[in-house]
Image (cartoon, rainbow, N blue to C red; front, side, top):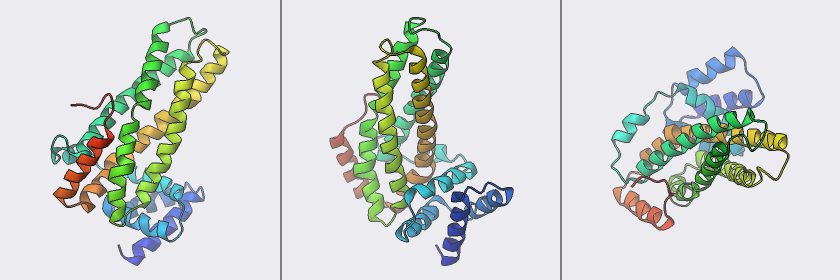
Amino acid sequence: MDENKIKQLTDILKRLNSGENSAEIKQATKDFLQTIDPAELSAAEQKLIDAGLAPEDLRRLCSAHLELLDDNLGQMKLTLKPGHVIDTLIKEHEIILDFLDKLEKTNQKIQKMRSHKDNQEEFELLKNIAEHLAAAEPHHQREEKVLFPEIEKRGVSGPTQVMVMEHEDLRRYKKELEKLTGEISKIDFDDFKKRLDTVAKFIIMILRDHILKENNILYPTALEVIKENKTWKRMKDDCDKIGYCCFTPE
């Protein structure tokens, strides 16, 4: 990417991270992002990271980029053979998104209850959801130990640093959700509902956004920069050693 685009991106990030939310900056961001593809954006982000930009400062840009992306996920999936590292990660994402939908609906129902004795089925469902979200850890491990290092070897670490940072945030909140499911009858129910609402909404918002960024930015970048079939085969072997989630499709 040329230096002029790097300067444009730097100026946009400064304005976004200053809290500016005008129509002008929104249009400037839209115009700029329409001129680059995910791989170019990743390269630009990497240059800014190398220059000292904090990875968390890229979050606003990632979110802005998602608003402009065409839905090309289906087309990308058609190019992947079953069992490909990226194919498996995408299919796991689809199942995780389903659990997030269930978490959202279950939380909404629980918030309307007056007692933990009102509907035991909802609390059993909540526990099941919490267990499955926690069971997604092998998914994150395969990304952090296999996929991300290969991307970073090719000079792109900005997007992966953002994803790892979000993994850490999500781990803390998923542990809190699991802990809460064991305290339903032990603490004040209003306090339980308040804590559940905070934790559930955080997980739902951050994880949905996280999956969108991986599906539409990080995974296409990986396919773009990792060209060698033998590398993907070795990565698949490494993923097999780490293992899969209890819900990973066969």
